[in-house]
Length: 429
Image (cartoon, rainbow, N blue to C red; front, side):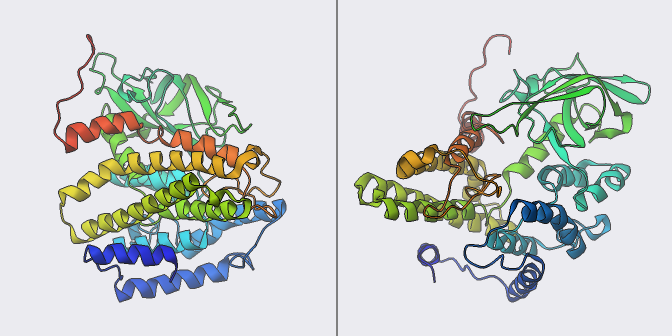
C-alpha cells in the first residue's frame, strides 16, 4: 500500500469510516479497467510511455469514437437519452478508473459536463433530441458565454442583449474569458431579453451557433504564449427562437444549475492531479537538494496534508449522497470546497517555483503536447520530470477566479452557511 493510501486509511479509521466499495462496484471497476487496457495505445501503462506529435494527434482524433462505441461518454445519463443509466456508485468508479489510467474521459468538457446535464434538467424534448446525440459522440464542441468585461463576479449585471425578430433572436454584446471559443460550434449564452426587469430577472439562457458572420472570436494571448481564452463579439448574431433553455427570462436559475454542475465535479478523483504534482515536486526536491531546506519540507507536507483532506472530504460527500442524508457539515463542504482546493493549489504552484528554481522559467513544453498534470500540455524530460512550470503557475492563478471567485465564495459561506448579514450594497445597487 502506498504512503498516500496508508495515511488516508489511518484518518478514515479515526473517523470510523468504511472506505470499501460494494462488491458490484468493484466488479464494474474490473470491467472498466479491462476495457481501458484493451483500448488505450499499446504501452500506455508502461513507465516512461510517450507519444510523438503525430501519434498524439491520431489518438485525440480516434479516442472519442472509441469511448462512444464503449458507451462511456456521459454513461450516467438515462438510457433513453443515450447513456448507460449508471448508478451514482458506478459513475464514481468509472471516473476513478479513467483518472487512475490518466485517460481522457470526455468528448468535449463543456458539452459532457455542463450543457448536457443542463439540458437533461431544463431542456425540451426537441432540444434534447437535437443536441444530446452530438454531445454523446463528441462531435459538437461548446463554449461558455457568461462573463463580460464588466460583469464577472457580478454576472447578473450583464449587458449582452437578445431581441426577437420573427423566429430568431438577434444578439448584440461582448463576452470574455471564453475558453475554446475559437473551436466551438455552439455557445451556451446568457443574454438579457427583458430590459425593464431587475438585473437577476429578464435573463435568458440560449444555445447560439458560433459559425456565423455575426460572431467574431479574438484570442487573448497569455504570458506563456497560448491563447486558450477568447473575447467573443456578437453583432446582430442570430439564434433560433426555440434555442432558449428553461423558458424565457429564466436564465439565472438555469445558469445556477450549470455552475452547480461545474463546481460539483470529481468528488473522489479531483485530488489525483494534485497528488501527481506532489510526487513530481518531491522527486525534484530530492534531486536538486531543495528537500534539505526546512521551509521546503514543511510546505511540501502542508500540501500533502491538504491533498488528503481533499480526498477524505470527497469520500464524505459521496457517502452523504449515497445515503441521501442532509448532513449540514457535508453541505458546508460543498460550499467551501472550491475555495479550499483552488487556494491550496495556488500556494502549491508558488512552492513548485521555489523547488524548481531557474528550471521553472522554461516555458517550452516541447513538441509532444504533454506537460504538468492538469494542464493542456504535458512534457516529460530526461533528468527532470516536468517542464511547463510557467504555464502551470499562471493557470493556478485563474483557478481562484473561474467557477466562482474566492471573494464571492466567501460571501456565500458567510451568508448561507454561517448565517451572517449580507454584505452592504452600494447606493443604487
